Amino acid sequence: MTDSLFKNTLTYLKRAAELVKIDPRAFAILQAPKRSVEVNLPIRMDDGSQQIFTGWRVQYNDVLGPYKGGIRFHPLVSRQEVTALSALMTWKNAAVGLPYGGAKGGIAVDPQKLSTRELEELSRKYVDAIYPIIGPEKDVPAPDVNTNPQIMAWMVDEFSRLHGYAVPAAFTGKPVELGGIAGRDASTSQGGVFVLEWFLANSEQFKSRQPKDISVAVQGFGNVGATIAQILFHNGYRVVAVSDSEGALYHKNGLDIDAVLKSQQKKGKVAKNVCYPVKIKEVQEDVACETLTSAQLLESDVDILIPSAIENQLTAENASRIKAKLVLEMANGPTTPEAEEILEERGIVVLPDILANAGGVVGSYFEWVGNQQGYTWSNEDFADKLKNVMLKAATEIDAARYEYKTDFRTAAYIVALRRLSKAIKLRGWA
Image 1: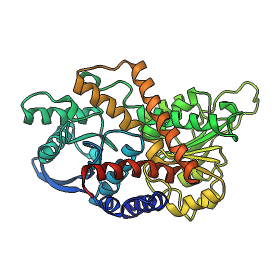
Image 2 (image 1 turned 45 degrees about the vertical axis):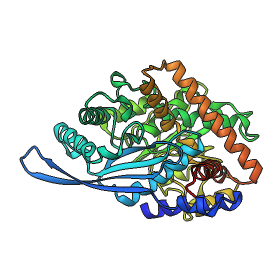
Image 3 (image 1 turned 180 degrees about the vertical axis):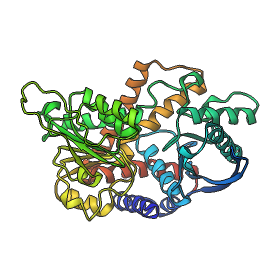
Image 4 (image 1 turned 90 degrees about the vertical axis):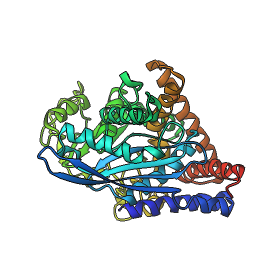
């Protein structure tokens, strides 16, 4: 799966390169990462045993600025996955106009099986191992799957200890007390909502419709999926289905996402066979919720489908059965190239990951800038600037879409390639 994710992203890159006629020497540089580091991390466990965990940091390209990308803790993390995600970060940062290169990191571990002390030691050991290649001007990590502000707090403290003084700009996604921004946790989802509503307002198919008349299904109810579902629910959209790894909950009138979230926080999963429909006065019938599989959710009859789980969810096998009119990619790489061709032929628009879910790294950028300058953002300033960056990027990508008569994803890669290749030529790398 992870090898295919990297192949997919290179396929999209090549399609864009064919349209914009990129210098082949510059393009060759973008085919492989600049640096890939593997580290072994010995951790003394609470029972007295010693366990070795393997971690990676892949720095794909830094022609536009310091490397930037998250760190994930997951038992299935691999060098191949981290490489693919570091490439995606490179295109994403370039597509939305950030002065960053792309990187990604990870440790093959199930953090749920570690005590707090073991988790802290692992986080600090990872920083010890990659310390020479990271820092505010080199590579700025952030949270990703199964990492959070507390882990970033341990990591920035360890980096600062090794450096000899506090360096808050070395990591982003930190607690507010250590230089983080209150809205950073929700910025990936909020950025996606800004892009979605920009598209709806400019779409002949949607612009005359009210949010309550637009149905949404969200696959993946983790931090990003749950947050975007909640934002859309409060914005008046009819979120009819949500799913986690154990299944999906569906109600044709829409779900009360606040109630679903409360249940999830108590039980750990989206509760099966427990119904939380939105109360609609005009609807007298008492309809029970349906339970679906995650795969069935993808094929549900909705206006907007939001894959927020893992890669390769929309494939050549199921693309012909997708009923949504619009796909907003909040996961990384959820649609294969073969599936996208089918969706495009059927008139289904895909708003690609490197635009739709870029709000997180945009939020990280503002945190990094504030840390460098000793500046604290208000919630209002942060939200306004996040919206400005996301809408500017969407407008620029849309212009490229019309210029080259192509789809949104290819247009996003075109915008990224133009920035990357020009910088490569200006630096004299090719």
